[in-house]
Image (cartoon, rainbow over all chains, first blue to last red):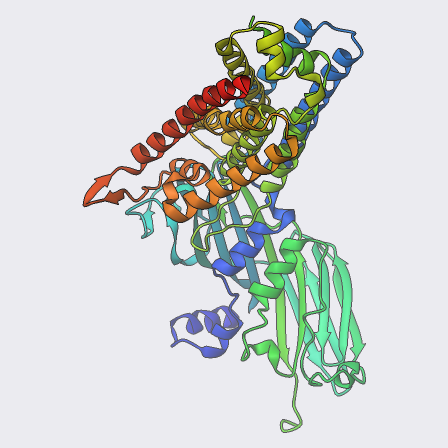
Length: 339
Length: 246
């Protein structure tokens, strides 16, 4: 329990600047980036349905006008059939899009950064963005291990509902968030939870040893090891498996490109998912945080949790939830003055 | 049916010369609507999502409807298929009022067809953007209203410069552009796009102050457009009468 004790002690101790620097960023600029990225737009807009509706409508009109031009149907029939087709498309489309149409009432984006807290526990810092396509009340149930929940900025909530309202009962606290049409709320939560996922990096003189044990029940995907002179894409670590590998620290080609020899090059790390890219580069490892822990001479291991569990439950199928979770370990390397 | 209206129907729909107008309308509206889904938010304090979809679709439809109404009224499509005013009045013995009503009737029919073709796009956009039904209904009514108020000036140009089609084309484009700029500069609520966006966004428009009297923006807007429309109808009849006399 030493690790847990140490972690709990850190919670009540005065604010530690180093921890604050490595805390994931969360603000409206990052939220806007995610919201407007084409890959995420499909989460709240029926692009495919609308495209299909437009194509079908135009195809119908084209067929009717072609038949009329070829004198296959009379002018009167052309007029009546066109009117019927337009009315059918307008009516069914209106009903489809207004009563569902794959448009969710709201979308919850949860981006969690997991860091080892020792003794089988992880410190989970979750950034939440809840946005709504219509005015309604949202009830967020917080999962076990919840430590803190705070609101970031005013967002765009219903009038008089700028503060969070907590409701206790049935074992789990709930937070009421009323949102306007096209309103949103940014939140930040912190959890301490048990997770059998542990990665350790042992820095040596000319190499690093990596030991990752994944008994978390989830695959770890898109794993990377970064150290000065080493940038290694490790791929996926399935659940229940373990990696124990040594990697040499290279001569550092980055130094020849005018970059500091100790500086990790995170910019070139990309993923197949655009949302992950934005979260990684803007939230978990923001470029503008100059004094972050990973800026110094460090070794870094990270991987995305595949299909992570939600730490906030909305209990409504009309609200779409997107969970992202990144596990990371940052280990400072010994500098020349330390040796 | 009025002979002049029947001629328009024959040329546009039976012979198919006017179908290109409706093709252009839907061919522009469809991609604009689809791409509007991806429009970034204009306001840093709120995410627009697809909330602006209906506004973009309605504004585009308004501009297209007014523009094509002016061009159709001006007989820019298949002009060789239409009989001249003199033919109607002198050779075919049609009263001037019949010619005027026939042209107005065909313009109204064209505006109705344009609106009908746009209705699915507007209805889908309204549903996706969660625009209330009254917003959709008000938009459709306004589109008809504007189409007629502006389109009638295409008939005026046709009657005044019947034998000079190139001049007419320049005049109606200058008229539309000049009016749009003038309304934007003089008093924003006079502009139809600005007014439409304001009522859809439920924004309060500033009243017009003249000699210390405050006139509500909505009243000023509708008064201006009613005057514009009626002035167009009167100018059309006077221009027809003068054209036949010459």
